[in-house]
Image (tube, rainbow over all chains, first blue to last red; front, side, top):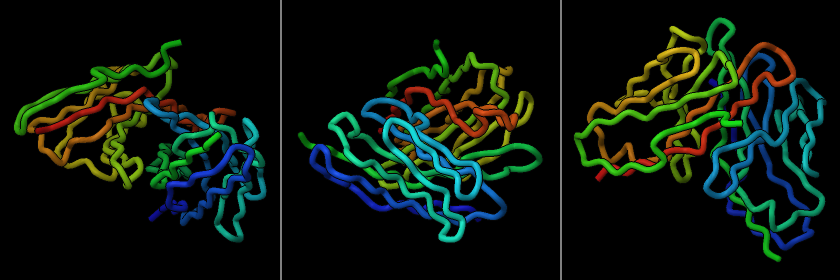
Length: 115
Length: 116
């Protein structure tokens, strides 16, 4: 079945450091790929997405490219801030039957950015 | 802009007690979901409802029941709570109409449940 594997955390960085969080997936068909972010005490919210191969999603300085040949969707940011401290989830869409879709999530990566 | 509203936010139960988590969305979405979040396990899908009148099992449905009361509301019931059901529960909704927001799940703030 479909699955998402993302790098284990926690990840601790200093402010202005470069961030990469790796995500690889296994899926049938042509899923869409997503990164969600969860700030402390809150629900998840969409950070960025890509719907087809070679698409690049970007938002708030984060970006990720849908690489079908390596089945990857790694999250990157050139210069992290303390406010980026959160849990990041990689996810893919899958068809649950008929036209129903659902998301499969990775286990999440906790990022802590120190001043 | 309420979005997805879950109640209660916190609940403590004793083993064997029952309770219902309520969820309502005001975005006119067809699809609604219940996930649980546990440390080191990420989010796991319990049940989902593709549209009003339908419900389907997700990855971890045992011990739970759901009701899609109408298009807005999707409740999760624990008939006989067990300590293994201690978790944070998230309700979410989405629209899969192949428009620009397709695939974006909108989450509630979560309900933290402890079963003693």
